[in-house]
Image (cartoon, rainbow, N blue to C red; front, side, top):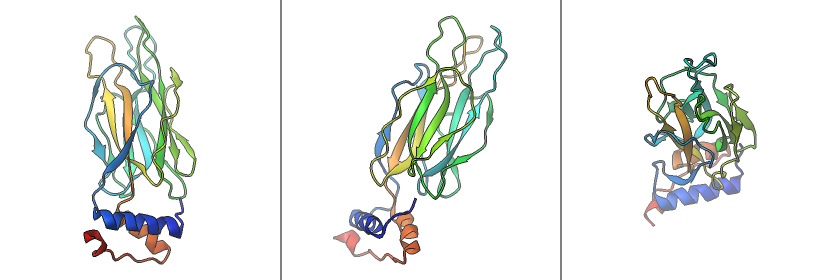
Length: 216
């Protein structure tokens, strides 16, 4: 994503007047079709910048008999601008898939969740897959299982803000009963902090000095 000079200048002034450098979220995006089981985990945020990629933890198909319990999607990791990943609660089954990245420096801004509804006496899996929209309108989807269907897209992060954190809803291990693992997720959107804006600005030949503005 390329930022124009006018947008960069606006963001610089906003950060300078706030006098803040720490990440903080300005909105929460969620969907209405999340699974009903489990508990919300801890909120986790990128320590630097925003999320430009993700990876999923998925348990493969277990065989389909009454003794072979499928859980499908178990975890979501976001990859941040500092090349580190963050995750909230993660289920115990499965393996991490390949990383999916937005192109051209764009960031994650919206998502849609694939969920199988309650199956009664049959095997429940709840959330099965997720799609993300990047700020350049690119759609990213990882390989997972195909039970259930995608619901409506979440809201998009507010203008000039991007996904920077997440919180997952995961069912604890049920023992001999039916496991579903990850059921739902919500994401937090942050505006760029001054250090991130500085990187954009330097690419445009703008150098930031705003110590005095922070005290206005």
